[in-house]
Length: 455
Ligand code: TYD
Ligand code: MG
Image (tube, rainbow, N blue to C red):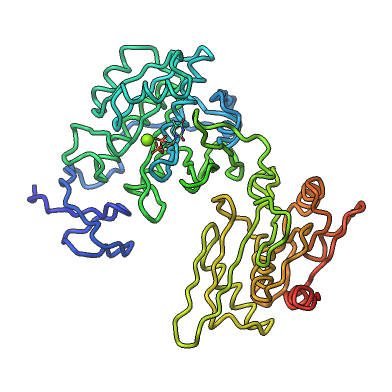
């Protein structure tokens, strides 16, 4: 057998190279290549086309098991999962440090245990005493959770094999787990992959709902290889600004359901509280309208949420390079919108700094936000407040047209319910207006005239 070559694995994307380099050739990250032990290859035979066992095929409509979802005890968590946890599935939960992943899973484990199912919580990050203190603080000290601090996957699986499989198994976090079959420190790509593989296999074979906590790198992706995302059934992200109270639980991948529902929580003194009706959360609640602020009726899954978008424009003395800073929206999308406003509407942002903020630490992903952002930008540029009772929604094309978006009637209904009596949106949205004022806009210049032209 040939002498195994040294292997370097990018800790960000998992790609393999045989030479150390400062930058990963695949994902372009710097200083992410680390040496890991070579994989053993048992390749005595030339190919795989013979010598195996025959597999049996099944029909698609064969009577199989129906998904028997179980509740996590937290309605918002169930909602984000697409209706509860699925036995025999693996969920990867990512999120910034301190956002509340451990708190959420401890609360769910406690609820599951209180409902009479068995829940196991294994932490590789905190000592059992620390978790007990947190449970005390959450008022969950009495919940019959099986708690352990461990990092060896072999120890964990050996222990689990001696007891009936739990309904819920939490591993906090996968980066601290260690498999003794693989060389290398916990957290390296091979270790994370091997540990996750063994734990997921246990979960599938025993009908356990497995939740793996995953650390997140600074650009927001789950640390370790992308393969981890391929290995699990569900990938969730727990988002929010640490300085704000609200947390959004979002599904990024879901083999068992839709990915567009979100769960909304508020971090309080006694843990995460569920927010069943989030429509008013992301409004700042001022009485007098200010320039640069526009309200956007977003749709998250099936629920409408009103969100305030704030823009600030600072004129610069000529010469300096103006900054563009965005919190809660895509910066590429902002650049595009600014370009459209310049090219199609003749506005000039080139010598101005542009700041855009979405209230409450919310991250907007709905494409219909374009019109609200444009309205906020124009209002800030003109220094004219928008009407306090107005909402704005619609997608803006590169040609400056305002395009129809999904769920216009729900957006209008919810806005009206919360006291926003006038709405601006794409032409077709108007439909059934019962007393509400709807203004159809077809081109971005119409919007500019309307805001700039008002006395
Ligand atoms: P934690 O669940 O440890 O975050 P993660 O596991 O994602 O790193 O949450 C830690 C933060 O949550 C901590 O900074 C304080 C806050 N917190 C509360 O505000 N109230 C509480 O009841 C708890 C348990 C935590
Ligand atoms: Mg934690």
